[in-house]
Image 1 (cartoon, rainbow, N blue to C red):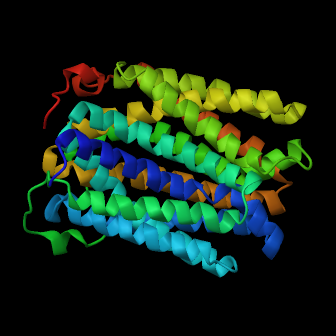
Image 2 (spheres, rainbow, N blue to C red; image 1 turned 180 degrees about the vertical axis):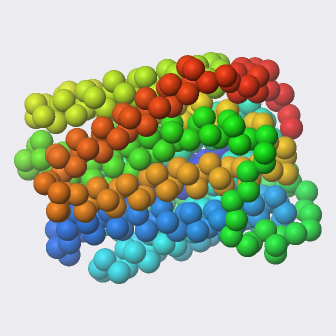
Length: 402
């Protein structure tokens, strides 16, 4: 028995959420690993950055594969690989094991994100574009919070959280088998495996305008996911390990809420609202760190998330719905290449800054200033550039079927 189109849509949305939850689950656990194995903040950011680079590698090689072989085979394989990754995490006994797990996890995520994103747009273009923006944020929020709760209140958190996620991934793999394929097979699958970044000419201008927002927002996520717990330990000496996961939950959760609340806005307006709010939120967060105020820190984080969500949704909706059906997975790959580069590389540089550049507070100041500058560039582009009619088109003008 095959799933209805509506059920298939929600299954694929759940895959986005669970995959990103799996990627953020280690964030509250880094303090546990660091205490047990004695590594520095540089190692923490390297473990995080390796994941982002593995996602990039998979996107470059496998990003367009589902446009040729169909969405189902790619998603089925990626879900099973994620389940295997959880086993590696659960049995990890050192940094090397974490690195292996993060590499495999990154490969599985990179293979899946463009396929599942394109699959949802195949079913419903308007809802799919929104889900592509909400899903990653909701997943990151869920993974950070649930993992933090496991660390704080349940036994064997470095095993239990991964066991639960492993069961979810296996169930989703079987669910994919019941889906109806939405992308016709065509020749050229082997050729598509050559590493490449292919963006249709019609999408070049919208992507150029969206790039500063993508880089700024995902660089901020990278900092919270890798060094957020370290920064909070500077503010709250002896604080709960739940705080690290709570910070990421606040950032990503408010982002998802803002995306859903503003989903009827045009992409251009979303970029304006999002980038302006992000500048204000990051500024308040930096001020809270200087004042050693935890309530202000979380208020600034929530405001940053409320900017991150609309800015990223504006970027997604200004680019992806303009692609033809056979170009969607490839176009999503380009977008995620930019996002994961922005998330991984600056985080590793921040880890070096923490150790050699004056500590986590000074590093956070420099990092936040860079995010604010990128947001300002994106805001200026939204306000002053001559947006094309496709960029300004509201979501309700996009057909509900491809």
